[in-house]
Amino acid sequence: MVRAALSAIARVRVTAIYAVALVAVATEIGRLGPDAQDRVIRHASTNLHNLSHGHVGTLLGSAFVVDAGPVAYWLPGLVCLLGLGELLWRSGRLLVAFAVGHVGATLLVAVGLTAAVTNGWLPVSVARATDVGISYGATAVLGALTPAIPRRWRPTWVGWWLAVAAAVVFIGTDFTDVGHLAALLLGMAVATRFGTPQRWTRPLLVLFIVAAAFGFLVLASAEGTLLQSATSGLAGALFGTAFTVVRTLRQPTTVHPPAGSLDAAAGLGVP
Image (cartoon, rainbow, N blue to C red; front, side, top):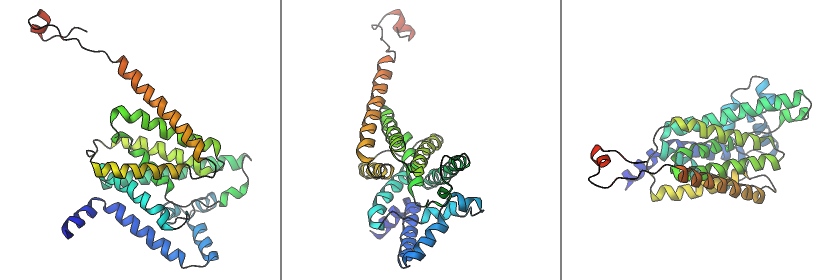
């Protein structure tokens, strides 16, 4: 039994190590006073102020500092999402997806904010905004699940998530919503190079349900966006399903000739 447990943990070792690290960091921060906690979060933030002063270490450190409430609220969902990604794609590819989403979305948001501040579209104070957590990396892993979705359901999956993320960007006022959309697209893009995923099993389907619910809550976490983003997601899913139906109907069918005909003897089908 112990050997089986160790073998199972080894298959999701990246997820397990990351979860332990998050709990350890959250525990240490929780022991600090409110002012000290604020200082830690400010120093770990990947905001324009820190990045412009050469604090590139925040690109890594920010992934271990979470200000989204008690660990018990978000860690189980995160573990299910990352664990699913690791079981489907293996540890190395999970790391690639998470890193590309976390770092890539952060830098893309930084470029956009720099342009917005320079042109006066946003106040200078946004340069010191708090930006820490696991949401960019987690959203990228969510997007990286796309090639593992069965082909006939893939457009529905893509339509749902793109519509949800886009709706939150349109409704919300937080730049992190744009980062989530960027991370989702980055995850979808990088996973096209991952090859063949592991086969789906019932335990993976259970993880999938929890992971999808967690991913939706990450994207639609802003106040007042839950219902609108869900409605938009349903519309996107219906569009994706319609795309699948139309594509299926347009596929040519092969009519096999009767046995003994010249075409059958030649091994040819009649279109």
